Image (cartoon, rainbow, N blue to C red; front, top):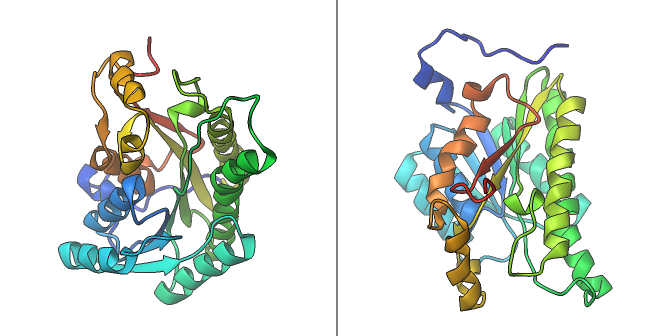
Length: 268
């Protein structure tokens, strides 16, 4: 079965970007990049977006507000991407609640910073369980739904990182870097396996203005802009267009790609 074609390739280009009638699920959707992805998919016309979160206290209120702002149905689901049965049940519930699943964004992730010689087993496993295992379990659940729905049914998008293709400085984060490199290759592997029923792509952001940056040493955040040709951090909202692109028919012939959005950070 060949890679699915859009219903009307010659339609007006803006129609290709529309998510009208689509149903999406986003893990890590209550804050940072994930929150902007939820908002962007809703703004692009998605009928329903599942905001999947683990610990946010305001997830339901956030979902309700985006619903009011966009007219889409945005519903919060508490889940745990590190538990295969739990995230599978959540993805299946989303598909049941809205009758289908067209788009899934595996965005949940964590970071830590330790010297490579000092990692404990738990510190290493914590990163891998969320960033890699969680991404795989989310994708596996979504992929099974896509396959049941038929040819060309789904778009799977992973949030990776430029850390998956380079080594950041001055921070030490071998586990995080390794986990994101694995996610990028996982996406490529699934893209080949899933060509009959879905497309699989990655977005690799650079330095994004999120709460996480504010908790890190000031000397790091002062040094990073010096390494970026764009000389600034990215507002998380600047990424939502890329997720809409990969979720929509505008990228109908793109699978296995890794979109790097980093202000030129990886170029020098």
